[in-house]
Picture 1 (spheres, rainbow, N blue to C red):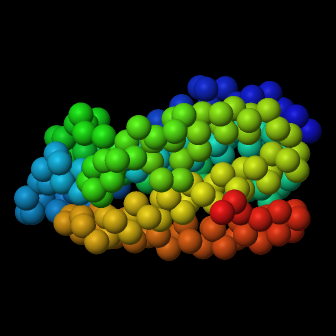
Picture 2 (tube, helix red, strand yellow):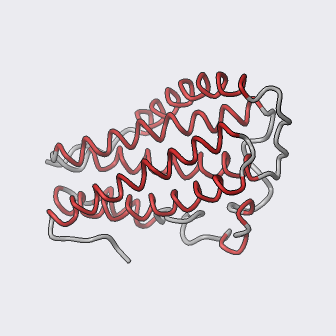
Picture 3 (cartoon, helix red, strand yellow):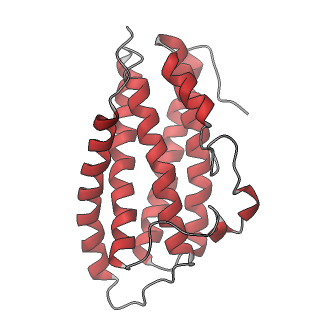
Length: 210
């Protein structure tokens, strides 16, 4: 069944709630790190926090789009879980930037902290690894039922692969232990969801995009 497109306010509300919850957790984690030096604005820690917050925001938006394009409970449940998890993690990342008194945006291109300045221009809004283009997001919003499910699973699989790549970069290069732990948790959680989505795609006669 086709539902109305999700109101921007609904997605914004989830992001705001996630930011509030994440800030509380980030504050607690920040107390643990209080004795350590604050990372620099151009550090891997700050770059990861800024870039992954943007990356997560698209995943939340994508998940709320598909929940309004299908009645399939398995896909809707997965989309809800991803949206809630990534909204909360995004709140933690932004909370750390607040605690460190660092800007949430940078004059440097995305992915500079991983030595990937060359991809900064992106393609049609896809600023970082795995991100969907603006055209792909628009297409998802036009599809319904099985087509929407398959396209969402394909987009989210690519999104997760990019997210895992970024999180692994933080595990290697970040210095704040709380950030490294969060990044490792992202790797494990998203790899598990990639395997789950592969099975869901197979059940729908489809596969992840190369």
